[in-house]
Structures are given as structure tokens and as C-alpha cells.
Image (cartoon, rainbow, N blue to C red; front, side):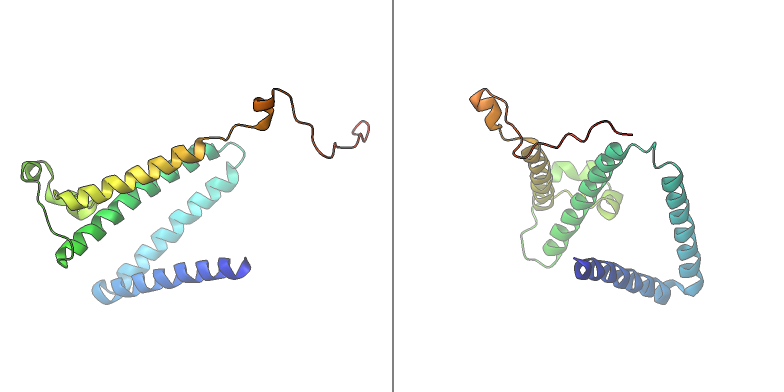
Length: 165
């Protein structure tokens, strides 16, 4: 388990270094340094707020919000990948002509929403898979106690230790 954690951490660090090197080559070191310092400062602010407010943080709401944001990232990544495969001429590109005026260019750049059947279908299937797996995970199997009509007893009851002092 420790090796898996190390590998995950190392991979993320390596990815960040490559990302920053790319910006360093294109924009220069001062821009990368300023961005890194701003990112570290904001991460520190979030860490301090988390430690100070840890007893009052709504963890369930935070996890749900994080899940929704990750779902949005998934849709963007699926849209980008489908469009890149179209640019490589792997799948066909079937433009939805009536949808072109309603999807401005910035939506393709920032949200990877393109007016083609293939990209929108891939994003729809990805969203359907995520929502479907959420509802499948929420379904609980019926317990045997409800089926038999009697309560189940624990196999090893806890010992009576007397009053807690």
C-alpha cells in the first residue's frame, strides 16, 4: 500500500514538473515562479482554513461538490478526446448544423462542447455511466432480517464492562 501511495504521489509530482517546464519554455521563469508562489499561498490558505474549521466543515457536502466537479472534468476530457480522435480522422465527424449557432467557439475551447454527434454522444454516454453507477451504488441489497421478519443477533456480543468512569 505504501508503494502504491509513493507511486501515485511521484506520478503527480512528475506531471506537475513537466507542466511547469512547458510553461517555463514558452513564457519564461518569472511567470512560472509567480504562478507557483500564488498556488502555494492559496494552498496554504485552504490548509489553514481546513485545520481551523475541521470540526464544523460539512464533509458530506464537500465530497458531493467534489464529485460533481470531477464529473464535469470527466465530461470535458471525454469531449476533448473525442474531438482529437475526429481531428485524426479515426471516427467520422457528423456536424449538427442546427446546433452550430448555439455553441460558441469558447465552449469548445474551455468546456470541450462541440456541435458534432460523436462528441456529444460520447459525453452523454459518460454522464449516463457516472449517474447510473451512482444510483446503482445507492441501491442497498435487502437484508435477511427483513426477509425472515426477525432481527439478527451479533455473533459475538460485546462484554458488559460496567459503568464507564
